[in-house]
Length: 362
Ligand code: NAI
Ligand code: MG
Image (cartoon, rainbow, N blue to C red; front, side, top):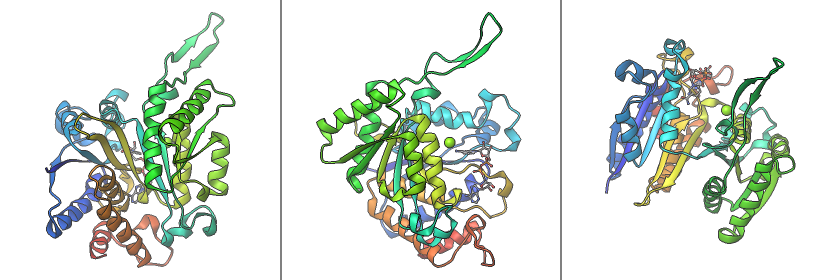
């Protein structure tokens, strides 16, 4: 049966980089019967302008019925002055919430040809391939009580609460254990059990789950502050990392910069498996809509193409096709093709479409 893919290009460079994905889908269609059923929709500023809200109910319904959603980016100066609830970013947040996407996968992959772009020494990052799994719908960003209070003496206090339940911990840990099995079979669970109750629970529950269902995976535990240090000192010691929303936010951004440019970084957000075995999933580049280079043909499409590859691997069980795209990315970089964001001084810079040409040729 045909797999349903919903494409939401969004704003700014979103439609530009998505154009290159369409070319790759066209290529796949010609070579063999992949059988995607493609739908396209609006999100972000484009949806505000076109449909009156940052994402319409109809688009949310399509997203929930699709086998996977591929999103470009949202936001831009045109919509910056709207009230918080009406901003383009709310479209993405609503999709994440309604699709219940609790596991955020952020690979940090070092492309050999870009090793010089890393902030670290080549020998520290060369060959780096780690996956950070961040819990995305719980923790301190959502816990109650929250708010700003004024005490009788006029002192104000800001309150957030870190809460994690056993099902929340188990479901994200399961995703991480499963990923580890498909990779180097090693999982590092990260929290601060030394100072946080939620961290104590996190460690206990991951340990229990490991014993019950995943004892073949090598499990270790690490405090989040040490993990930050280790990511910069010796990142290659990690395979898969699983951590909470707050620590994952920071550790995944830090890990991302081990490998160079925003224009290279894909991501996936996964939800639960439904009765028919389908897992809710949204794939997107880590970068935003890059208004400073929009409409100039300068955007690097590789982060979105790598997000598409993740989609083929995790949602459509097309690992070989994902490998093909990832290898083609390595090859075009090795051949010296560079968009502006990953350019080396003095070398020629290619456009978005020329990068797409090179990728298709590879
Ligand atoms: P940004 O990621 O859009 O851009 C940061 C810098 O990186 C810019 O100089 C940009 O030109 C460059 N850049 C980003 N992606 C690139 C690519 N593919 N190729 C070449 N260069 C690239 O972040 P910024 O500037 O903070 O935000 C711009 C807009 O995007 C804002 O409205 C923001 O809210 C939104 N945004 C949306 C996100 C999303 O849709 N998930 C994530 C981050 C920001
Ligand atoms: Mg962040």
